[in-house]
Image (cartoon, rainbow, N blue to C red; front, side):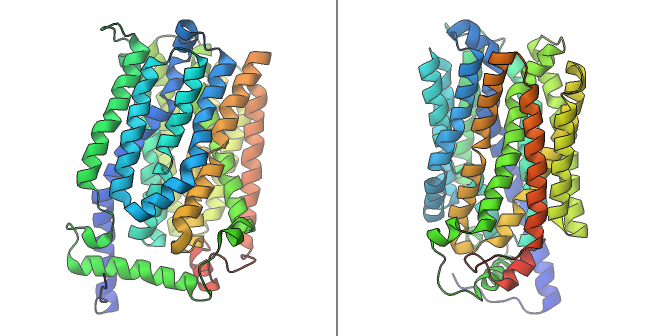
Length: 449
């Protein structure tokens, strides 16, 4: 669809601001709710580790492997799924993703042994593949670059909110009994079923393209589309043809993006899957009590995550803010090994501020670097390879606890990974791309933080 430019610079800026505000009001709340149910279905297995061991004989090492296998399926199907989203449209493909992961999540209620646990965790990852980078790609098609940082912070608050409410909700669901099912089975059935219901709602609520948004007036649609088209033109102005996958895979900047997100994922999922067990080591044993304690780090992180994004937008240089947040995460992870269980919990609350803020600040960096023609596939590639940290961390923690009875070595490793990522982020802000495979110099200035 060809859209004409709105007349007048001031008028265009006003219309653009109105359009952006409407996008945030209509789209962001839905994405936050989708991410909440997504995150709960992904990590709720952390609350039933003890039940899986007592009822099914799934030990700590097997649990760690199964928790991590999710990310193998996720990584293998991430890029194909996001390429299909680009073809089929966000509404159809995000609905498909939600329906299939909901069905697999419900099937977890009927797992009987380690093999079934491994298979279903792998399938859950394959079903969810494409959701997160699909949302990232959606932002590149609906919001100008300078608006994506705070939008990402709001979207990522979904995972923090999920972490807050997952504990209390799970505590209630684990107390359910009936129809021959125990609490952990009811938990998987109800939380997976919520994804199915929400997926149907998404199909009727979401639009794939700006031109389809009836809640924007014609001039607001024009202003939004023009701003996004202008950004894309800046990126391709100095390029020849469409970049090849070979050139992308040899682009050191993209490799660094993958490493940074891998390090962030290591920390996020290492804490997420093992935090309930650490809380129980403090002497907290009731399911509801564990759930409420588990919510505290994520409550703290929500406000701080948005605050970091707002500071980066106001003062610029978000790569420096990202590096600072990674250093905060590293300090918290290392401090968690220096005392008892209570000290570890307090330190992990501090670390959560860092790694959640880093996650929000990271994604606008590759979004601003990539040519929109290949953004869907490359964002999926970064996310899939980075999310392998979600396989490594729980698997490593499971092996360490099975062998030594402690995860202190893993926590120190997470701190070192965060420091390494902070160094790479700072280096990323200093160098120019070695080739024009993804973005021209004009586009890089815009994306240069």
